[in-house]
Length: 114
Image 1: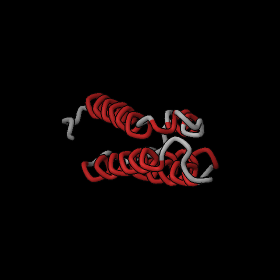
Image 2: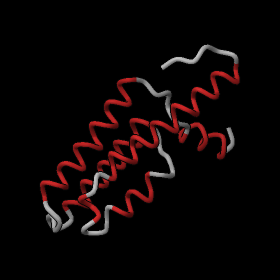
Image 3: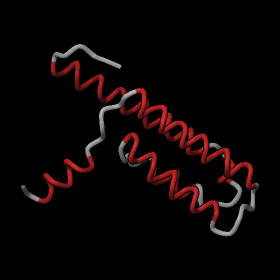
Image 4: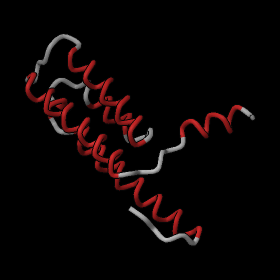
């Protein structure tokens, strides 16, 4: 197997299920809530650790998407980290993935599923 095929297979977004969606949203809401509780200054590197864990777990649950990168960078700005950026980004990625999966099932002639 060539390297691009192997890399493409590993980075392919998993099929969205209710469990994966719930897990991704739970991680995002928990990360945003925890950062809100820590306050605008947070702990030293505590907010960054939360962001790293949120990025990895969200990518694992619903697959990596390019929208996760700007969210990760925005979370490094001290005041902007209190906004619910992980939750908003996760909802956006889920919506995009669902539309992508719906279009691929319609194009292949299969009945769309949730």
